Amino acid sequence: MQVALAFVDDDGNEILLDAEEAFTLFALTNDLDSATVSACPTCHSRVLAAVALRDLLVDAPPHPRAGDLEVLADEAPTLHVYAVDLVTGCDHQGWRDPGSEEWFEVVGDYQPASHTED
Image (cartoon, rainbow, N blue to C red):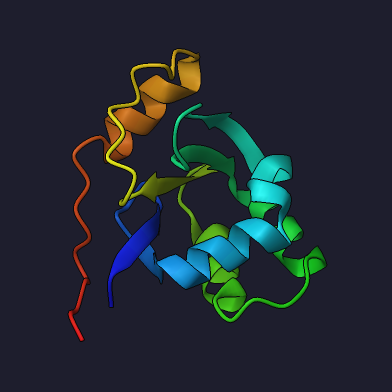
């Protein structure tokens, strides 16, 4: 699987989406806007409120990975879940609000741990 987007919690648990899954998720949830606390203006990396993410996924049209993402959000050890855009090649220089510091602290050097190639 070519990983395009990762959702990670503060303990390092992750859900990996391929490009089609990521595109569909963003389309079905209006770019995750209602759950976004802070976001890079250039890519899809963002800080998401865990409870709002779960609620958004429950209310959105069905997505094949929604159940996995709901579990990640429900079991997150903190109030936030982090989305990491793995395909844009962004350096996040335009991301200047305080949420960016939290995102960098948790996932700044993130590489998918459970990535498997087809």
